[in-house]
Length: 187
Length: 187
Image 1: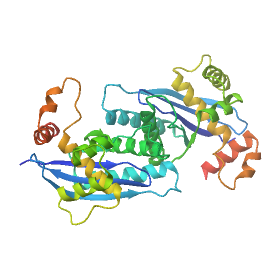
Image 2: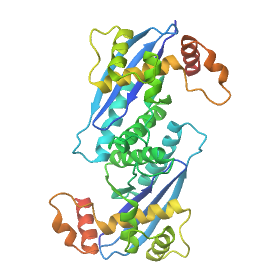
Image 3: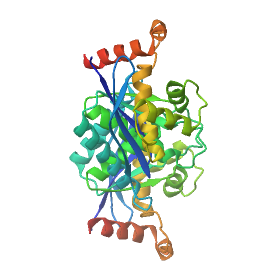
């Protein structure tokens, strides 16, 4: 069976989570890579973004994902780091485009719903489910790494975000969507 | 006299303003380049960011600025495009770092104050002053291009943002600051 390899990115300047998974059309998944790119809070913003970009490009080069899924950042967020998070997400999306890869964004509640079945799940529930799906002995750490894996799984299971006129798409099972998405990416 | 060449970036996805000026220690300035990189609102976000990055890199390559000044984006902004603006600013800062250039950010009110003398100046007043300083026959258009030139002038005239322990820096005249900044960048 053809698997879909997804790089999930939990964007951030201090810690940017990166997780790569292989997902089969039957929803089963395997861990390929998980890690975190860190940059020093005292460094200039442009240097921090360059470190994040280099880390993402290295994972793309080493693991050749088919698609990159990035957490969608909202201005309404009350985290004071939200602008840095948005800048890091821009760099992640740019790295995808420059590697010739499709990219997608998913909201935190979409990720929670895809992984646990409900959008208001807490972080621990998401991490536990990620560990179970990937048959890991421990919860992935730090949380940013776990979030990146959850994003990657979410992307494969949801398929691409429904677009206008794609209502029928939503009637597919998650496995059918994953398959369709894999087909689309391969083309 | 040594001049400081500054690339100003007014970040945006639909229109990203780019302006390059040469500024002498006596505050006099010359237009080197002005333009706008546009990306189609219907294109995927990652493709739009790649277009913006390519446009910024081309200007850096063609005009070899010493430093890149980018407008600082605030989450409190009520523009619904604020996240895209933040992503574009991240890409601009990344392009600076990857070209080995220093970068700086300035807020809109810092730019207005540097150009017109007061932080609540309206856009037209800023554009008129930019045109006068650069001895342009017309106001630079579109507004994004004018804003990019204003950012570049602001950066040269303000010097770099004061850092902890740099209080004495603030007692310098704008010309002295421009000179000091030019010296610093050349080192």
